[in-house]
Image (cartoon, rainbow, N blue to C red; front, side, top):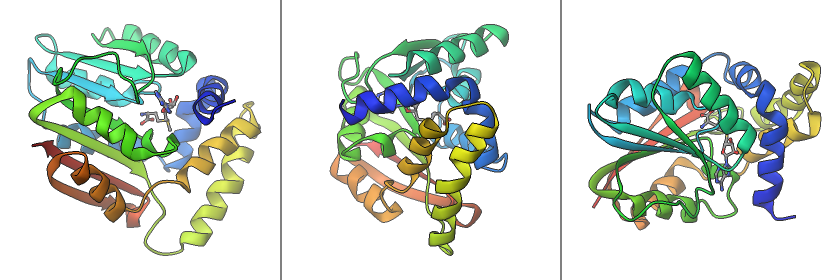
Length: 229
Ligand SMILES: C[S@@+](CC[C@H](N)C(=O)[O-])C[C@H]1O[C@@H](n2cnc3c(N)ncnc32)[C@H](O)[C@@H]1O
């Protein structure tokens, strides 16, 4: 099985417990970081926005608050179970947001289709994050924004952080009635994320300008943003 297929299968299994475990893993700060990502996307009413690797759709729904009813947000993820949960959330909150199952490294949209694109927690799943960034840049118009949010190893106590994540996440997932192996996959991907400087270099090489990053909570989350040249 390819690593993309393994990832899709793991997220299908994680989906029912994803929001709860993600909240515990980020000590409840995940939504604050997603709001910062929505802010950095700098979207306005009427714009068309992509939330790639949307998962259960929280960032997409925050963006929808800012651009609808005149604009549109499309959330894309390769896990049908994660997308099913995102659609349920949008329906329960009476929010307009389109959710599609697709591979974010081969997006079903033409060049320059969006005014902005966000990717929260997805690029680290890829064998080559540069492929994912290039695809985001392809679908955003010149001058549009690309925002990347990732859980990252902190500036201090990196080893302790890695060990806590590696051991606590599967235990937590298992204790909450989930699947230890699939939650172990979620923790493993955090160790693969490029350093902030490497991610900025990937974004610049993909054609983004004004690339900046900000670290949160001692570096356990990092937000990058840039503009398509
Ligand atoms: C850690 S979750 C992040 C979900 C959400 N963006 C958030 O902030 O909570 C990563 C998501 O990326 C999706 N994903 C990973 N690789 C993908 C790919 N190649 N194409 C589409 N989705 C992918 C997974 O299915 C999963 O839902």
